[in-house]
Length: 139
Image (cartoon, rainbow, N blue to C red; front, side, top):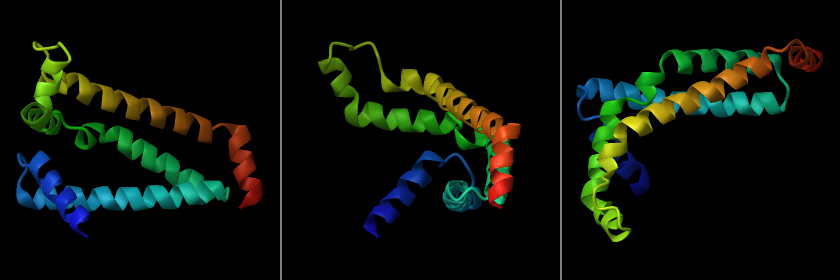
């Protein structure tokens, strides 16, 4: 239970630039999306056509709201935390001019790109006629 409380506190810290009601809504929706994702994954393993269709919908929704999932402001806050707590490690590794915060934009863009690539491949695969027909046979 303590781990969940710690996770909520970190979540509130990273999204502190948002109004409190929006942080709560974002957090609740994040859990909803995870639960739906697990249900979709289970349905895909069982080759249920509804799971295939819902996976495509989830992929389209996630891609359309990608910046909401990986906002640059949250990466700035997270990397500032890393600089404060672990920045000395970069100096010890012989990289005194590099800071975690200098990687915030790169990290945000990389997370967005990886999600778009993942969901693009997912949607492409599950809309192929041969894959669709396999799910139709099982449903």
